[in-house]
Image (cartoon, rainbow, N blue to C red):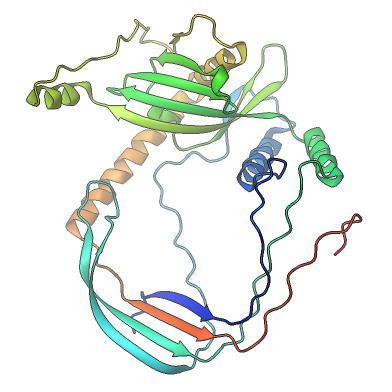
Amino acid sequence: MASNNRYFLFLLTSTVAGTYPMVSSMKTIPLMLIAVAVVAMAASAHSQEEDATARIIGPLANGTPSPPALKPVLPPFKATSTVVRRIDVVESPPMAGLPPVTGTITQTVHLVEDPQLPDPPPPLPPVSADDPRVLARLAEMSGKYRKIQILFLSATVYDHSRSLLRCYPNGNAEKKITVWSNLDFNHFCGFSNFEVKAAEGGVRQYALIMGIGNEDTQKRAAFLAKHNVEYDLPQIPELPADKPAYVIEDAAPDAGAAQLIADLHDLYQVEGPRMALAYAERTKAEAERRAFLLAHPPKPEDVTVLFWERTQPAKPARPALTEGGDQ
């Protein structure tokens, strides 16, 4: 069997380990938001004692590929029956704009004896946001870590020279602010956390979550002209070209949202050359990978499926925590 096969493990069991109902109460802490908050606060710890100006916290992606994932070490399996067949497959392309991955693969399905793998740990019981232990932990974390704001940003970049921004401070749609900037906000990809030193002292820290799109006005106009449609180019205000600058479209913008926009441009004033270089490197790496994939179209990999029926009973579900935190 080829070494680059994909393996899928399945088990069949007649024993129910326990049921875990979905909790829909609004008082239950959303797991995703907890994860975002923990990551954000962990990042803020890197500069807790530093006298920062404006800087990116953590790595800045430059197109260098991540190291390959470690191949899983499979336990020994003893097959009791095997079925092999050839299948024509069509898979998604590895990059947008490339042809799909097509070919014929070998699918091998083994029914194996139960390898007696340990049971996965059951999920923890849901905890209410009003739980005293949760409130005490949050208070402890708030005292240790500097407050960090989550900056939700939507950016449309026109001709890599002007960007239309819609900013939602901490996801608050009521404080949305619309801004035209003379920066190419493609340069703001490749990182998440940054901080800016406040004029009155202290440091403001942010976690940037951005959705971005690019508009080539000449290509768009030419495309629409073929369909007898006039391109309605947005009215872009005059902006200087020698320094980061922006114009707020809102008549009475929220002060906090306006500060976020100012801090983004202050960050670029300091880190702009490094951000622009990283973007150029990412663009080059993407073009090189695209050219390589066009010259060496990938082939779908063979698939091996292992499945078995459990012979050992499943362990009981984890009990709920007591007031003292014990099980």
